[in-house]
Image 1 (cartoon, helix red, strand yellow):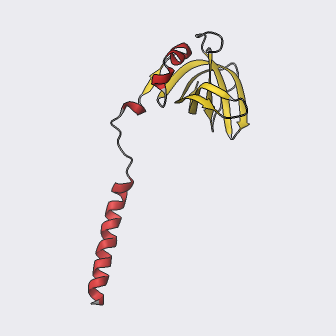
Image 2 (image 1 turned 90 degrees about the horizontal axis):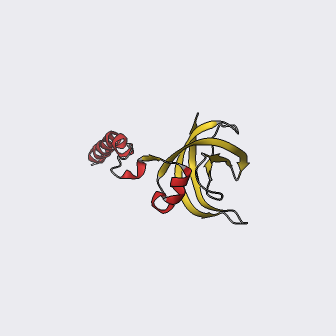
Image 3 (image 1 turned 180 degrees about the vertical axis):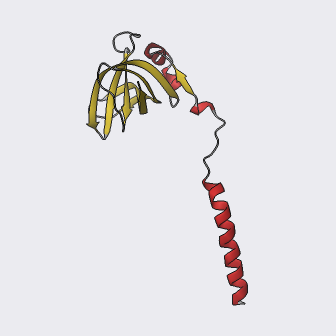
Length: 133
């Protein structure tokens, strides 16, 4: 009786060890949410509702970097498009290596109508940002 239980346990553990890597494999996505859309800041503001939750890429100039604010760096980018009030985007990143006045391509996930409290409201905020020169 003990032999049967041991054999069953060994077979179960062996099966689980074989299946574990399969279960941990990265899921494949068939949705378009992983696609990256390149656009100007003016286009992003014009299409902000349809871009919510999507990945966007913007090429522009870093005008300001605020580091270690709420455990993030806040990178302000302008690209020469848009009107006052909608002519810059803030990209939020935990890791960034950019300097003011540098040209970058910034990419991240679009969040809209963000209210962080204490008067910090953002029509558009791009999160999980990464930057390339």
